[in-house]
Amino acid sequence: MQIDANLPKILPRLREEAQAVVRRKGYLSRRLRIGLPTLRTAAGWCVFFNEGCVLHQMGAEEEDKFRYKPAACALFPIQADENGNWYVRQKGYKKEGWDLFCLDPQNSAKPAAESLQEELALAQRFEDEYQAKARQGDSSTAFTPR
Image (tube, rainbow, N blue to C red; front, side):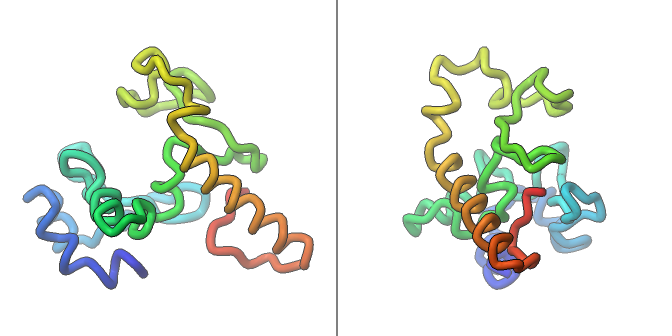
């Protein structure tokens, strides 16, 4: 809903090819991950990538870098596996298929536990909310890592 409501101010910040894809097909693909549609790509990159994540940049300008980002993007590269266990996506771990610079631990001297503090706190918040709803017998949740 945040992206839909702000699309007019997001679109001009996208790469030209990404703008064309979003205008023609929308930003959500038919491909599912953990039961939810994934974001479309243009020229091999997420449509919201333009010298970094446009959604992240916009949120950071408003002092909340997660404001416009879908939960899975805000958590990236932290993810829950099929058993609900959280892990950091890394090159070569759990058959990681994406060969991104940021997923190769060899490219950073800083351990993920340090560099991903905000993302880890967000994952903990989601997990706490999920557990609280489960204890109350509520099976609905905005983000279900399971």
